[in-house]
Length: 244
Image (tube, rainbow, N blue to C red; front, side):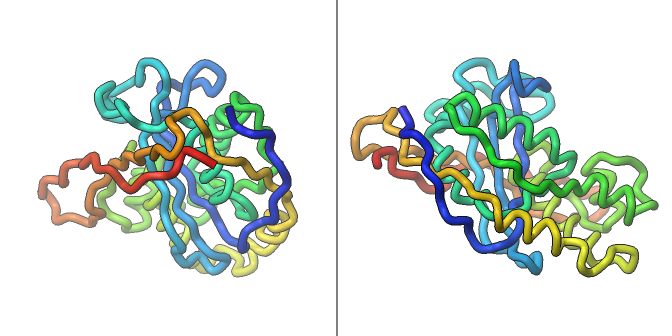
């Protein structure tokens, strides 16, 4: 079991661009099967990435959408095993996503399952930003907005691919003349004041064992018209200690 959460000091100000793939559409009935976080500082400069498949403790759901097979999550960490690290990454930051309320709802419910209430973090939605500052987009979906911004091909419906292009979309929208230059000041200040919980390491594996992080990745575009997009590759992207 995870220890009871204790208060922690917020991290440096900035943004946490998140994306989750899930076993279905309902945060209450379905589970997160992949999560990614792209960290940006308060000037939208990249600071780091985190991504892994997760064992949902059941069927992986719509493989035809997210292309995750049951065999892909064998040996993947459970959510409670990455929860301490995820809290560290999100602390003190504005949470960003394309239709961010959906990603937030899944994360909030996953943390609730292990007894950790997420604090009221400021949210920033690139779908709404694109609606206001990318009128030429042919739709509200991430692919349509990325195309309108000239961001090229990306491995859609992979958590890391979606989070990376969402970060690029945020930067693009921040740079257009119609976007006020100080639009982020308020949310950044608010995020810095939010006290985030801190968790000890999960102990669900043998003492001293490691939790493998399984990452799906593909090279980022753009690609020439008619060119075949590269395959998404599953790799082990490091590991975390499972003991305190």
